Image (tube, rainbow, N blue to C red):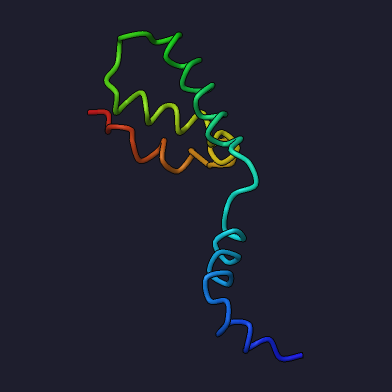
Length: 83
């Protein structure tokens, strides 16, 4: 079947359906980020700036990615030479 004529008749329905397909199913990630930020903020209180707090919150939220990182090469490069 050729549905080209439907695109001409209902152009906004086509756009609305494409936008609907792009919407996330739920907002679990945002709820997770707020709960992580709440845990971190209660632990550190006012000891850090907002930028550092946001960075630590992102590291906590994306913990599955940070657990898979290999820090061995970077830890060797970060050391200073003994004199």
